[in-house]
Image (cartoon, helix red, strand yellow):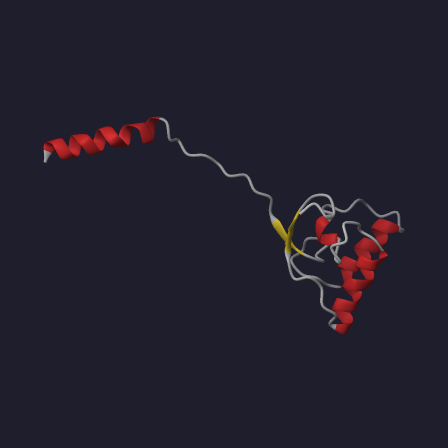
Length: 105
């Protein structure tokens, strides 16, 4: 019994000495169309895209969720598709995207 305990202890030593664990880095995921990153696709997401394009608004915090049609470019089509989704129930790709350049998933 003592040998078994000693063997297990000796096997465990490298895990405690060398295996301090590691951290996995990941990018948070956002819902496609959620431009302002509030957790929902709503009217103000399309407004944020329009202000980004023409209103002299501030830069978008994350471009990928703003690329609603997943074309790789944030444009007028994305704002229109977002509004059609909110008001008419039009389908958008129900996918989770990471922050980054539009179309970089």
